[in-house]
Amino acid sequence: MATKHLQNERLRISVSPARGGGLLRFDARRGDEWLPLFRPCADEAGSEPDQLACYPLVPWSNRIGGGHFGFEGVQYRVPLTRDDEPLPIHGHGWLAHWEVINVGADEIRLTHAWRGADPFSYTASLRYTLEPAALRITLRVGNLGRRLPFGLGLHPFLPREPRVRLCAPARGWWHAGPDHLPDELRRPVPAAYDFARARPLDDAPPIHHAYAGWSGAARIDFPRARLALEMTADVDHLVIHAPPGRDFFCVQPVDHPINALNLPHAQQGGLTVLEAGASLERHFRFAVGELEASHG
Image 1: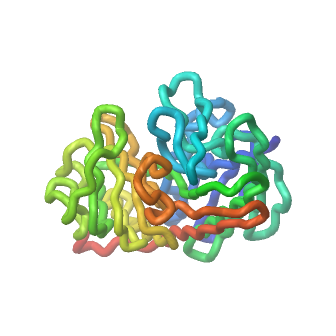
Image 2: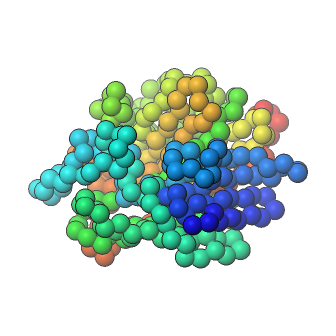
Image 3: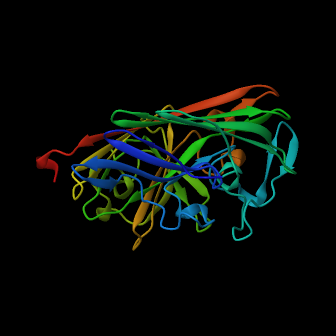
């Protein structure tokens, strides 16, 4: 399926229906130049999802410990979603071909259905809307099968330019083991991992952790591009992935922590139990502004 594009005077996006319905790019115009707000996809014809600029997370985010979970007295096994990962990760949507429903002047709508061999059976929809100075993304899942917990999120990749700063207030931080699964929720957030106030990402240690009690708002400042990206979402968890020596970092708005299906009272930690026929919708917005000279 061909790449779809939206553009206005200030912003542009490119969407790949065949690659998880994900974004190949999200750019802002400054004068005659287009500057990346998400890390642009270097291989637009390739098949590796982690080369995308952003992709949807449905019907769960991140890893499921042991590849199984229990719910209401029943044990469910979840097959691997990728052969090169030891645990099922990120659900199915990011690896799926999405069908284009509509391409308008300022909106692209896609859909995807999953009826696989694991417990989940669902239909999902994804809507990208360009506002004059913001990108709005709406992700929805409808349960086609048994009563189960569902979760949603986004996985954007951001360019890690020099002196980039992050502000993302949260009340708790999940310590993660070597397998990247959380083993302890700490409150308050340890100082080294705290982004309650804007700080350079390079001042923090390598991060691959989930945050709880996120405020639903984050800000990324790009001093070199002189742009600020304000992210808002109707979710209260965040996963930050900032590996050293890479040209990207990830700030992922999600509605549940890593391995939520195996945490006590998972549905109270952000997952939503859906009956057959019920649906869940989440909203994400990325507003673009000029960075003041004093923040350079």
